[in-house]
Length: 68
Image (cartoon, rainbow, N blue to C red; front, side):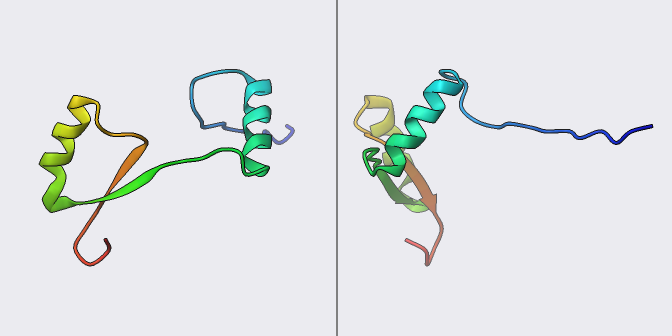
């Protein structure tokens, strides 16, 4: 019996392979901008409210004591 190779692809569920290739090319050229803000756990409620209002642009990452 021959060997079996299992492959998995994890990613976003948008676009197709060609879209992915194009986005990766843009990122490699430095043309993809991102906005990531660190949020302290103590401030999470205010930030969730801002998210609900649509005030958040980009992503927010929760950081714990001593890492912000």
